[in-house]
Length: 215
Image (tube, rainbow, N blue to C red; front, side, top):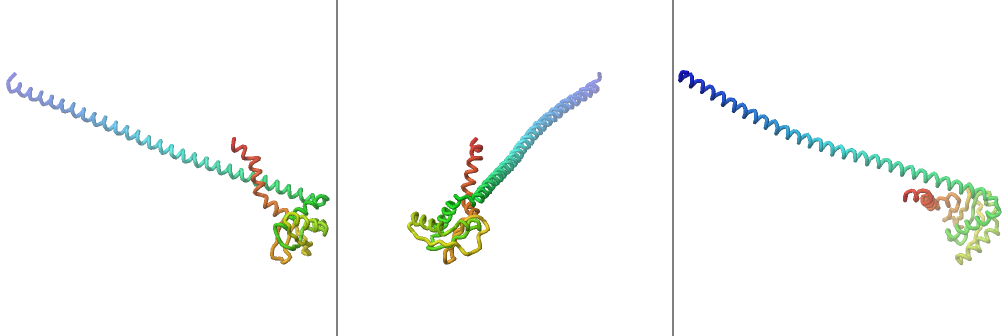
């Protein structure tokens, strides 16, 4: 081979070798960059998935708390409704029972106790007693005198009691009005029941609900 041709062939071979080496370097660099980008992308994906899972857990927990709160609120509302129904039922039955006792001869004792209680609460020297029409028929001078004696025994005070000339009360029970008309003590059945409602509600709750709550 002529020296010129040989030199030309060697030059071409060198250029091809340099091109091959450069190509391999470019390919390796590209693969390295691609691998780096894939790793970054994988980390980014894992990070996003982690954030998404965390948000999903937080949202799920929030939803769970809302649902549980709603359930607890509804359970409490239902419990209160049941308690109210039971209390109202008990009060209605007691009121009906007391109403049926008016014609009983022993009802006189109940009237004495109620008038005594009202007179002591009113704490007046003289007062007028009013009641429903059926009860007024049982309130006579002897009954009022007995109440006066009972009050004197309990408090050492004397009180003059007379039957009121006002219209009879529409509902069962006693109302005492001071002789000067300025103060009165309501001891009617409905009022007495309202005064005891809190105690009745507490007893109903203790009897029917507190045991279940402990369990």
